[in-house]
Length: 152
Image (cartoon, rainbow, N blue to C red; front, top):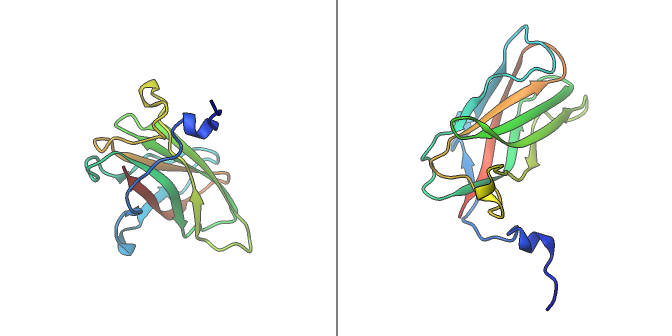
């Protein structure tokens, strides 16, 4: 018997629907804010991005698109799932001086609950999705994001 690659054993190969974007309009890009006076290397509050029951099928998130990064600095975005904001992904972003303020970053969301092993980070449609951001420097940050996902 021929050995299977590890990604096959973990169910990384999968079929899903067309790509989805949330929020769904350009005017609705979600604002994430770190207040003025914030201490460096401290996360802002969790902000609801995808409300529970937005999708009718399990879904996963493949990209985060960040718009309007205001300062040359290092940022870390986190995605949390469900009422307890279970950590699903951590995404570092560096904004360099000559770099555009917008970027799209590929990610793979994951569930830490053992019942989800081998399920490629599928998020239940009954779970809401949240995002928060940390900035290396002190002071306010106002940025906007989109999450790009697929239903199964």
